[in-house]
Image 1: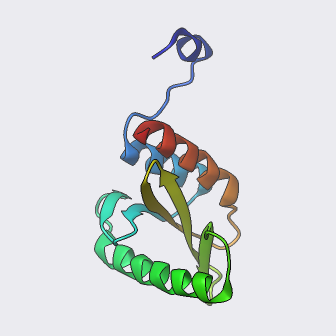
Image 2: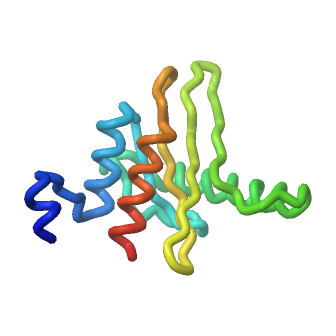
Image 3: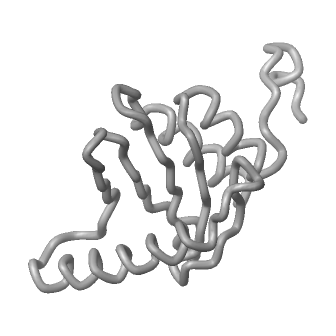
Length: 130
């Protein structure tokens, strides 16, 4: 840790779980999962959440999004969001770290903002994995 971080009192997360936990706390999210584009769960908060189902669904959505992207001539996808009847959202944010593509998933309750909080988490994930 450098002196600037020590002097400012900022403590950077040291694990993916810590980043997801901080993101859930800041955004009031119910669940967050970091997965590979192949659908493998990398980190999940809370840890007892069954991330395998979420990871499989998001991987399927990734494939559908990629097909739509190529057929419609869209540029690289940044985000996919699904709303339920209660306006709870399943938000999937894409992250590129080097040659790896990951997906940050958050279940966001109605009325909660997510973009700023997920942007911060994405920056921290990139820093941690770079």
